Image (cartoon, rainbow, N blue to C red; front, side, top):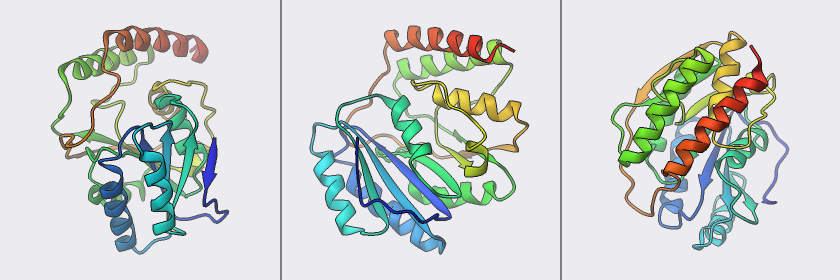
Length: 238
């Protein structure tokens, strides 16, 4: 794992950008995110997490770091390690007082982030809901199954478990992340709820992917989700 353009300051906002084979989306994503954050008038950092991309996303990320020096940095995973490790690095390797992890595919519009930031002023977590989902049927099925299991196993209910969230750093520092899979999302929400964190939800648009392809919506993932949730339930014990 290598990092380019590291810094030690503490910005107001950190945005981590999840990137795996997103060469067609990465530049517009970073351009729009930089423009949006500059317009907010607060200190910020953007960290691209390149998860072993093979389509040229890595060199493009390096070029963007040079182009937006002091605003954008990149963390390279030598191989594709999966969304769990991307989420962990997105939360743990950033420094901002408030942090969000956005997908590079532009299904979440960077221009909508300020609305979520307004909500975090009176909360510890903002869980963003997709008002109209533009996902393949299998992905929607997995999400529905996932939400049902989380309610049955943990008593926690939300319309959207695995989408964009905004966290206060002070809350993240109170939570030990044990999961290494996409279950990181669920673990953080459940543990935040048990810590009596101030949690709010905000519905924002979800846009169709216009370049590249979605990854991971398979029956194998459905089974893995079930097993991972059972493991998390055993770890939490109560």
